[in-house]
Image 1 (cartoon, rainbow, N blue to C red):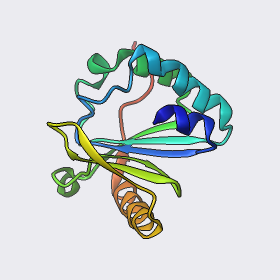
Image 2 (cartoon, rainbow, N blue to C red; image 1 turned 90 degrees about the vertical axis):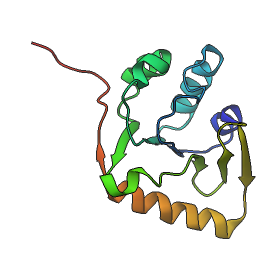
Image 3 (tube, rainbow, N blue to C red; image 1 turned 180 degrees about the vertical axis):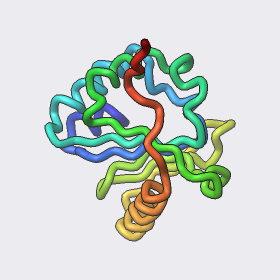
Length: 143
């Protein structure tokens, strides 16, 4: 899926999940694809929304390292407390498609390109991002 996004002119990605613990974000095979997406879309933007980024660096070390180079294009957000329990699990490419996980345990989801559903998803993304704080910095400065 990400390969098609990297090649297909999809500049805005929104990935949303309570923890991303079982997502393959940093698999070796995907790292070139992430870089291809970033270099192909000069104005591209990727937003990750999670209830918590605790443990994220341990689970996805390659992606975290990649993000350091592309931090100007990647934003990590954590919603305010009342939204945390109701976060969806989806991979959304603005105006193109929505891949929504409906069974995280069985790793099943629904893919839709239906315009009305994409509009609803965009509105949901906007509502969540407006009530979220930027978190999980790409680098940390130490003294």
